Image 1 (cartoon, rainbow, N blue to C red):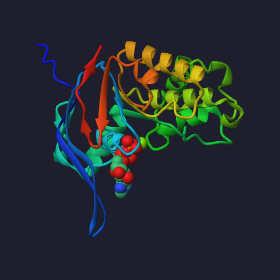
Image 2: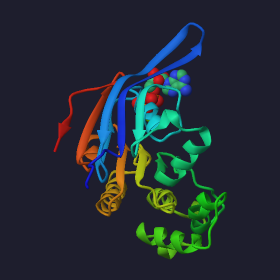
Image 3: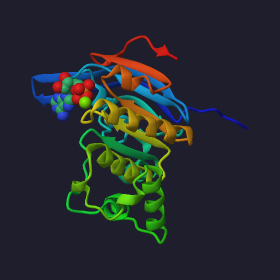
Image 4: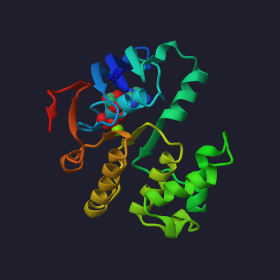
Length: 229
Ligand code: ADP
Ligand code: MG
């Protein structure tokens, strides 16, 4: 039976940061959202609108929020911290604006990083496959500092793909790239999405969001009306 259940289900999510006893910032003010398996969703919004806060919650990096979040049908408030980090490492791959690579280290070693704490006999084969998927097979033994920005982001994408996540979360992944390189990276995301990976992409640029099938705009911690394509 096809249940057609969303992979990500957020209901009335609120996030408040308290920096001191009398200062609080309402970063998210009641976000409800369902994302289906295989979706490619762009979340847009100006700086400070709450994009990264939402990303941290979806990515199971932040469990201090109000509202309910179900990932793959699992209510995450019911999970222990250990169960949560296990679920995170098996389901979610992260990609950031800063590529967060180790510098004087080869492409292969960077891609193998997620296996440091949980290694298996199959790691190198999967790493090589991920490197091939992002088109860097000629650079396997190069240090990442020898690569261009676009190539560095490809390494970060391969590192995320290495664990075979069902969801890729990318926070402004093209923010440090020139226009053409940014579009090449978006073509790569598109290809990965077509192979079945659900993608949630954060950007404040329209031409980047246009690569997604669904665009959502955050304004001051809330969604504006959805524009679908
Ligand atoms: P965006 O990614 O869209 O720029 P953020 O989610 O980073 O937005 O921030 C939303 C709001 O929450 C902003 O007002 C920001 O200053 C505030 N904020 C974000 N992170 C923190 C934090 N760790 N502590 C206090 N305030 C924060
Ligand atoms: Mg941000």
